[in-house]
Length: 211
Ligand code: B1M
Image 1: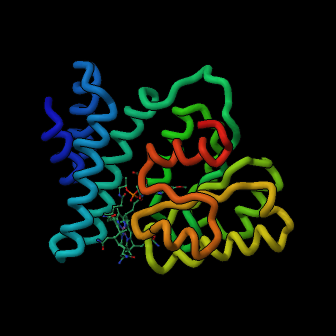
Image 2 (image 1 turned 180 degrees about the vertical axis):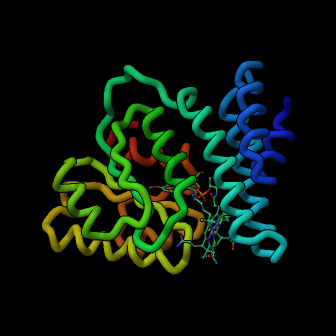
Image 3 (image 1 turned 45 degrees about the horizontal axis):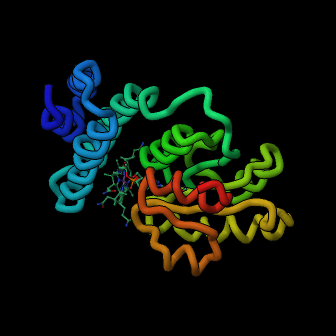
């Protein structure tokens, strides 16, 4: 058992090996944050690099994503803790046209781990679905994730839809995802941007004055 073998399990899309290695690592008291940040996430970054270089293709990205999700299922109970007083409610989702959900799921996990109640709308969430969720769940924050440059505009469209529905003032908007920058967040009028999952939970706290 080592972080290296977990890295290889995710990189090669070997869900069985990943599951066994992550279980062994956790039983051996390896910090779950190390499994995530030193093995799983770097492996997904390498998958992206190889895809860009034409050395991996969509089906291989998909099987790596499945292996990563297997790891996340095991890590989730260790990274989230029950019985903490709720800091507030956050509605999260990956924006319309975008099916990437690993980063969004990690953000949801970290938010839960730091005491937020999370309503996860899944992927391909249209501006109207975010608006409906704000009406239904009355969250303090909505968190949008986008991994494709082509789906980033949906974030601005969602903010506009919130304004049109008269809901913009009652909810903070936080955005993130690999192509997202603070500059883009400022441009579309989002309240916050976070580059990764752990800063997302810190950002949500500062947005609510709970840091
Ligand atoms: Co896709 N894909 N993909 N893909 N994919 C990328 C994003 C890409 C960069 C790969 C590449 O070319 N290097 C590229 C996008 C290029 C671009 O737009 N600039 C790309 C492409 C092109 C595509 C398709 C178009 C490919 C095709 O069909 N030809 C297609 C699009 C499908 C669609 O969405 N409509 C596609 C499909 C897929 C799969 C389905 C095969 C699979 C996704 C499976 C799944 O998610 N269930 C997949 C994968 C796995 C990737 C890569 C390899 C890995 C993404 C990932 O999970 N990273 C990715 C390459 C890369 O990102 N380097 C790639 C790990 C994850 C932990 O990081 O999601 O960045 P990330 O999340 C981070 C931060 O960004 C941040 O915190 C997270 C944790 O630290 N964060 C937030 C994320 N959301 C946040 C929200 C916040 C705050 C922080 O606040 C609310």
